[in-house]
Structure formats: structure tokens, C-alpha cells
Image 1 (tube, helix red, strand yellow):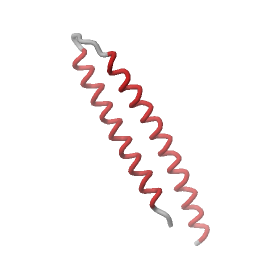
Image 2 (cartoon, rainbow, N blue to C red):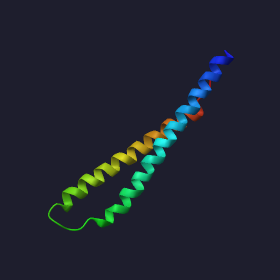
Image 3 (cartoon, rainbow, N blue to C red):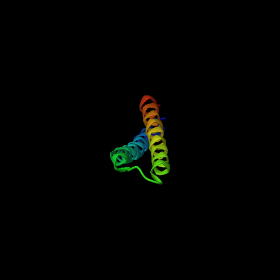
Image 4 (spheres, helix red, strand yellow):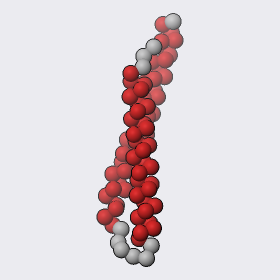
Length: 79
């Protein structure tokens, strides 16, 4: 029905908006972390910290890719 279509479109817009906000936050975090990588100095714990940091950075990048896929799917789907 027309009401269900309107409800779905409103839900879809809200969902895309939430996903875009999450995407923006994740992209800012990636930017910050990538810029911070230059501050790691050679030292006793540097290699361990750097590994942890780069692993977290990769996780954020995977999250960004997932969010982009979800947004793309929602943008393609219409009732």
C-alpha cells in the first residue's frame, strides 16, 4: 500500500542517514590514526604497539567498506 511504501522510504532514509554518520566517524578515525603513525618511534614496545595500531586501522577500514556496501544496497532498493 501507499502507506507501507511511505513508511519504508522513511525508514530507508533514516537508516542511510545513520550509516552515513557512522561512515563519516570511521573515516575521521582512520585519517587521525594514519596521521598518527608517523609518531611511532623505535623503542622497546614500539613494534608491538605499531602492530596493534595497524591491526585496529585495518579493522576500521573493513568497517568502512561494510558501511559503504550497506548504503549502496539501501540506495538501490526501493519498494
